[in-house]
Image 1 (cartoon, rainbow, N blue to C red):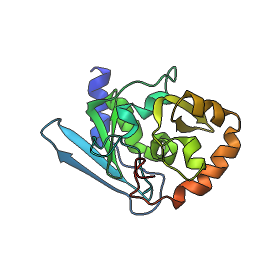
Image 2: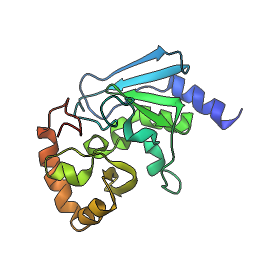
Image 3: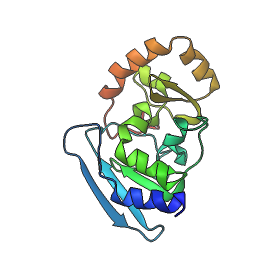
Image 4: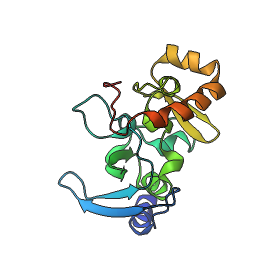
Length: 180
């Protein structure tokens, strides 16, 4: 058996294990575009960056969030063929294996602040996060708006994370970066 086939079997049979303890649910649904999408939910109901108003409901511009943590740590684009819906937002993956890893532990792989810019979140604001401007700090993925903002954020990463951890939860769950 090849690895892709085995990963697809694992994904179909893998139990859902989210890190948040309450109201975890999982469902699968058929769509016209692809075979199956797994749905995972937990308590993380903060705003997620999915692009400007009217764009697809896809997080991290379609990049595979597991790829930031695996192999050489270089982010790769995901595919609609391998997707998981987490708290109502689609995440795309480069392989069934990566989709299965995300399905098992979505909070581990989902970017902080819903994929919004980490520096903007420290100011209580929403701005888009660029999937190519990122850092992994203490096992968590952070995105920034542009290179200039990332340079500023890099001057005091710990301080900006502390501020963002306090400010981001105050932003309404239905807020969008173009509303902030």
